[in-house]
Image 1 (tube, rainbow, N blue to C red):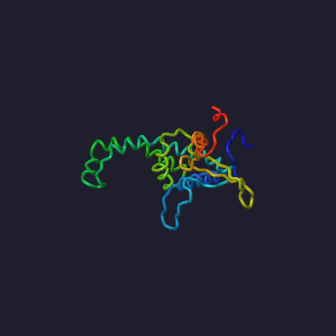
Image 2 (image 1 turned 120 degrees about the horizontal axis):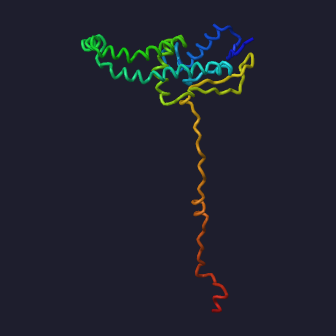
Image 3 (image 1 turned 90 degrees about the horizontal axis):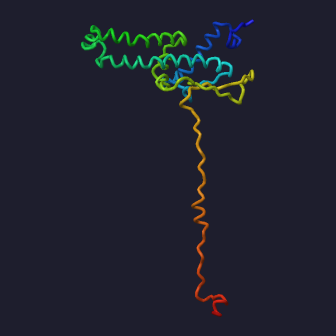
Length: 213
């Protein structure tokens, strides 16, 4: 019996479940990478993977947690960037900065970012996915408190076992925009429908009442 154990088994043992969720979250983050030759081609739609509905619902909390960890590290990263010099690495100016007290201040400032990256690396197990998460995805959601992903159920089931498929994607890029229908303006039509009275020509006889007068 599963006493107060939340989550789905997905037909796997616990270690296999963790490996499955790691691979799904890593695959979602890696869709944001650029083209790297013919072997690692980017997907057609960035920030989107297609899996079963149960797997999408199960991996969604892991993805949200990783993005939250990376988003909370952004202020520390900005503060560390201000303390870092613009000199090239291993140059005389850079070596002088390494031997100064500013180096100690920079280490204390960057330490939360290093801890966050190590924590995300334990959760994902892929350095490239962690790099994309902190460099590209986290700044995009800097002003958003949660709700970074959405799950959309697909109508067509999976071939073979007829499993329910779903889309797991990051919000912000593929959002549906509701457009208000333009209301028809009847002023121009009413102006065109108004017909000016046509004056009778000179050769036509006028009314009899006018002749008697």
